[in-house]
Image (cartoon, rainbow, N blue to C red):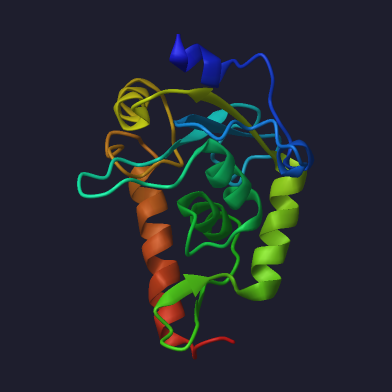
Length: 182
């Protein structure tokens, strides 16, 4: 049933709706799914579930403070250093990844690139979610059962996996060759 709640949800939520206060996204543990009105790659279908994420992730040594509301909102307005989804989308859309910060260890798309990506997501990304006490177990099941081309972890069986992994790797290599961005 969880797969249907994410693949064919009763409702998809826009950035505007998710970012309002109070937010409709619960401050609870669960799994969220991303659908796109325009696919981030010509090789992917629009209008279907392409990625699932969880909040919190499994942590054996400490308790995570993450929840569905924090993660979903961050994906819409954060940066590639803190969002695998944003990193993947930006790489697919051809935004230049850059090293940032004092050490240059973090990689984002810079202020302009992140702003452009946020606007693209406002126009194209829609999200749904389900609450679940142990989202990491459900995420593993979903990745094993569904075609989720934007998920890399636990998803080597997906035909899009090697292409996406290579694209992200090349973006990081190019970023390391460039000067640290402010």
